[in-house]
Image (cartoon, rainbow, N blue to C red; front, side, top):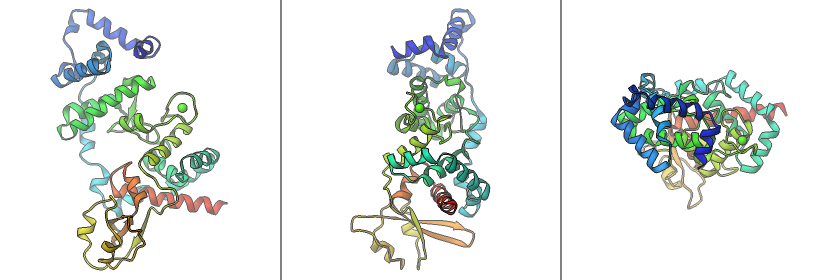
Length: 336
Ligand SMILES: [Ca+2]
């Protein structure tokens, strides 16, 4: 019902009309693009059957969508997997980005007051995330989201399951937020808007900060900042707690580092490396190893560090966000 109304009034009207025309002509029974593939057909069936999408719309969208090689190439070399911390850090922790961050924080000070108050996530973290993700909107992504997702869902077996689900989420999101699916742009993995939410995150965690009834992560700073804060709250951010701190270790850290970013280590575990940390009996932390300019660095990753990795699993990413946030905090304090 909702979809029907939207199709009548929304930008989907053109698509529906075109698809309808095409289907009524002779040649049109020969589907094209991903609509002509077995995987595409099965997907169309599923979306029509289980989610009540119009088949003509689905055929038009996937029929106009073909394999996008640039996305497959990009997927095989994300910076987080090929760079060391020494190489990764200067991409994000540099004067130009810190200046943009401070400018963003200052010009949105009142908004950030409200978001911080409501969600308990400090402004420097929210501002750092938006800075690392899109440099305050400078890099929101130029890849057609539908084509990226369809390519990864149907032509990239390694991550097909994940991206097929994201493709589905993307169409559901487009229907809910009244996006024209073929017009939406994103990163090569179809992360969207200033905070670069993938479709499932957009649906689950984006909020309507300005109360206009839409969740607009492309243009509304109220929606964008509230959505980032909400994402952190929903993943367990603990207001006021330490994120991470650097430590010196003695001995071989391999076994503890291998446990990953999820806090699982006790104070006794840290003691085996000569590190004295204050953890309550129930509290756990992680040991993060980074290859810095001066050799290996070791950092204690507390719960909030892990929460940052829920945004992007790489510890390099979480450390970049943390250090950019520190620079923002210091910059704002100096100006006061
Ligand atoms: Ca809104």
